[in-house]
Amino acid sequence: MKIAVNTRLLLSGRLEGIGWFTYQTLKRMVAQHPEHEFIFIFDRPYDESFVFGKNVTPVVVGPPARHPVLFYLWLDWSVAFVLRKYKADVFLSPDGFGTLNTKVPTCLVIHDLAFEHYPAHLKTSHSIYFRKFTPRFAHKAKRIVTVSEFSKKDIAERYKIEPNKIAVSNNAAHDEYVPLEWATKEKIKEQYTDGCEYFIFAGALHPRKNVVNLLKAFIRFKKRNGSNMKLVIVGRMAWNYKEVVEMKNDMPFKEDVVWMGYLDVVTLAQVMGAAYALVYASLFEGFGIPIIEAYKCGVPAIVSNTSSMPEVAGDAALIVDPTDYHDIADKMSMLFKDEVLRAKLSKNAIAQNQKYTWDNAANTLWANIELCAEVKK
Image (cartoon, rainbow, N blue to C red; front, side, top):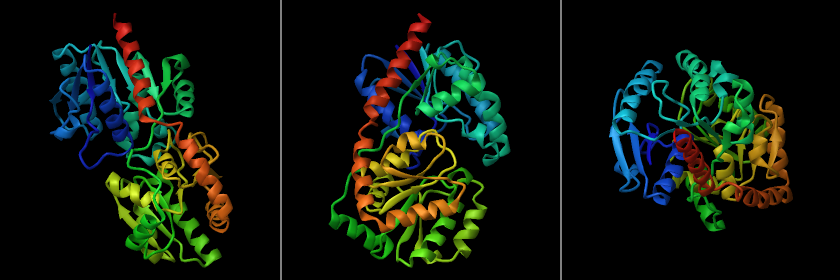
């Protein structure tokens, strides 16, 4: 079988949520199925580390797909051309983008429909493109894979798609995330936060991540508790971050907020593992990978009561209303004052994380690729 794959988000040194899902599942499927050929379709020069085996043929075709007009040209012309040239049996697209210009059965991974729920949080051009084409891609696809039961229900209901066409392949955490020894935690705190305990947030900074309310909550927490606790923010400035920057520069206790930008996975795993707790009060998530990254380190979390997050968090988190920064601050204070509660949540975090593995994700994705191939036969 020839499996063509959209690998445009395999970007060296810049892997984020969807990129990690692509990397982790493909690496396993390539190794587990050496009898099949994989055609990796890149939209720009690629790193050789992404060619996971001898059964991978990397192909570069432009234009670089980073704008809706270029999305269309790349998908419906360049990708469609590659599918014909290599006589692909299945097209796997892990980033939610399909091509309407092919008869090759498509296995489409839609991580979430955040753009439907919060269209104003995207650039207008991107919002229009996603809302116009994603339902068309979804209906054309032979199989749809998503990352949570919440997203499965969301896709089925919003796009009027039979639930039995949609499978759930959960995300997981990288192997670098592990519980840290006390001495290691102390060393990391000395390096980054002057030896102080800290809450952590990790994720690209844009309105849906709700960082402004997190900062407001941290201010309230500091005023109420008078502790030396710090807040570590990990993630690149993505878009619509003006208000975040304004708060960064002008907020009270700004000296207690550590802005780290994008971190490689080894460094992030260390910084996450030494944290007091994760605070992830996002407005909407199809899954919420930082939650289980924290859990794999035994770090408890404070997470939103919306979308997939309660499902992923299980009983290892305190749940908050992300629109109410008072609630976020209250839960931060609750966790800060109650070491018994924190220890209980940390124990639950390890157990909850065990439900999510990349092996399971890859196996589910492969099963749906095979279903697409059967459709073709």
